[in-house]
Length: 223
Image (cartoon, rainbow, N blue to C red):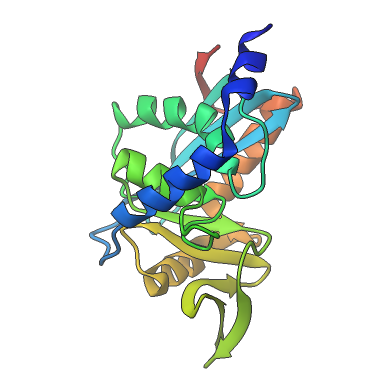
């Protein structure tokens, strides 16, 4: 039995869901500090092979500071609502390596924040793990219903506004960000339909997994 097969066999979805419920109690909101460096992280897959890309840009100029790639086998199976456990196999070592060398004031994550059945989507996982303000950006709604208030469409789940719609995107706080701040910052950096650091990370990870040009991205680790 391969390493991936052993991990997949040992992964317990019920324990993972319970862990999310418990960890969600540790999340915090609050006002953002000064933003000078913001990042975006995304993962693309070919089978179980994942390529994570982390792009850091200046704010508000959106000039690229760095781009890092990590190639790693992701063994936890994809289960709706538990995607974070698969994505973190790639994101955690990639982001951990970057934070030893660079500062990130805010990170965009391709996934949900508190807009999640247990209020603990991928952006919440990442933010809590690294004590880093995060915003989740997703293309599909995971929970709740849309309700218009003023000129903004909010996603309401169990009586709480957990996300807002921005064009075709659903924006939700992860850690250390209010919903209003998440929407405001996302608007300020969105180009071509996506927050710019996240768009660049998505482009870099897809190019790498497809064998295309990776631009100036540095491959920091492979396993």
